[in-house]
Length: 110
Image (cartoon, one colour):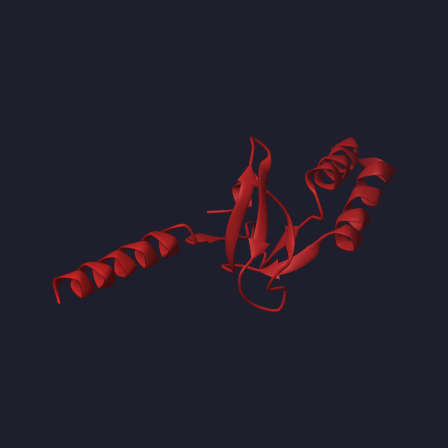
C-alpha cells in the first residue's frame, strides 16, 4: 500500500507541474478583442516595418496584417514554444484556432 501512495503522489506532482507550464494567455490592448497571430516572426517584422513608414507603406502594412495574421480571441490560452526579445512562437490551446502555431508580439502574451 505504501508504494501505491507514492505512485499516486508522483502522478499528482507531475500533473501539477505540467499544468503550470500552460498558464500563458493572449492579451489584447487598446480596446481590441482579438490578438494578431502571425505565421512567423519574419512576417511580423516586415509588416511592422511597413507600418512605421507611414503613408502608402503604412496602409500596405495594415492591410498585410489583416491578410497574413489570424485574429485570435483575447484571453485564449497558449503554450509558448520559444521566445526572444520580439515575442513568442506559440500554439493556441483552445477556441476556434486550437492547434494554430504562430508568432505573437511580446506584449500580447502573459
